[in-house]
Amino acid sequence: MILAAGLGTRLKPFTDEHPKALAIVNGQTILQRNIQYLASFGIKEVIINVHHFADQVIDFIKKNNGFGSDITFSDETNEVLETGGGIKKAAWFFQKEESPFVVMNVDVLTDLNLNKMIFQHEKDSPLATLAVTSRETSRYFLFDEKNQLCGWENVKTGEKKISRKSEIYLQKAFSGIHVISPKIFPLIKMEGKFSMVDVYLELAKSHVIAAFDHSDSKFIDVGKPESILKAEGMFCKV
Image 1 (cartoon, helix red, strand yellow):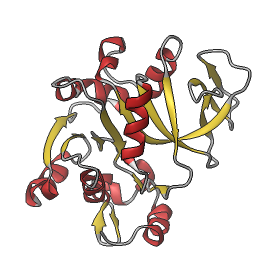
Image 2: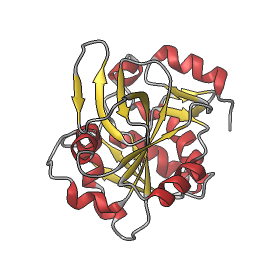
Image 3: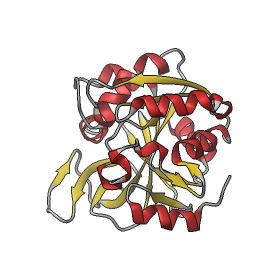
């Protein structure tokens, strides 16, 4: 699943007239780049949630025949449901089979090896595996020495949420990429608009939410205009 429903307020003025999914890096939209990134690991059945200028996203995909992938849309035009609500609304798409599925934000670019991440997830069988790095940011997931989620903190505001006690808390920055077991859906009790971060923090009290550290990979959040310029120096035309 590619999460592409957000308003993209950090990318104004581009997002005053376009969805952030159609922001361009070296001549290609970030949506195209991520569809092709997933396809490079054999993931060619993709659902994309849409809200802000949804018609532009749908028309772009149809015009380009899904860039060779089978694309389904999850319509959130009435209300953007955030990450958790968006994933829950698309549950029907993932519950057709028992294998884990990948979710990623449309506004991240990376060369993370998804095969390695999926292999770790299938080997250890947590509810979800979260891609993280050791980069500096303002908000962190907190993990124990076994790389299991224990909490979250905002180092700017001092806010901290602890789901389970640990002798040490390792700060890891979330990359917006998840590998998730469909077994998670019956456990999600929230409805409507909510964040997947809150879901993970609640479920971490009694289930394993694991980390996959890819600090050795290229990664950038292209949610800001200045990040687009930086991304063009990191990711050539594919």
